[in-house]
Length: 177
Image (tube, rainbow, N blue to C red):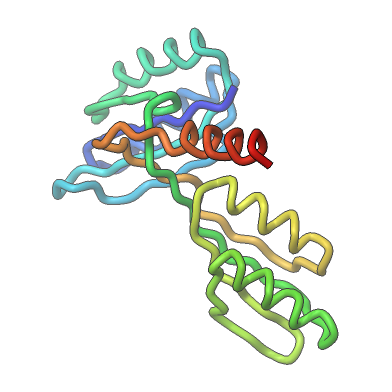
């Protein structure tokens, strides 16, 4: 199962290296990693996605707390969160396909950030499901390059689980139609 960890750290040199080393020594791959300045100066938030069972993630969390400069480690996998990812995707476009690609971009609210005779670069922001869906649709065209930030996430203070709501709405829709 994929888990999302949110880690607050003191912004000191070597902290990311120590975290990566811990995961490497334990034989775990970090599927997604995003690092940036947090709400307080000198503090950074690391959001990472890791595959493992609950027991393994619990052990990794305990090991993370033993590292210098680690302030808070949260497994936010099962709590209501706002999740986003940014992706830039470059597509080799033939003239006949351009309207179809632009329609897909429009549907997904992607921004065209560069355009030339032969190429188109889209900026897509959204939850990981949206990113996966647009990649799947665009894969029928010639994707040249993809750059992704990795998932970032913050817990919802409202505690509203939008995934649960989406599932309830889709079940209701299919039940009545």
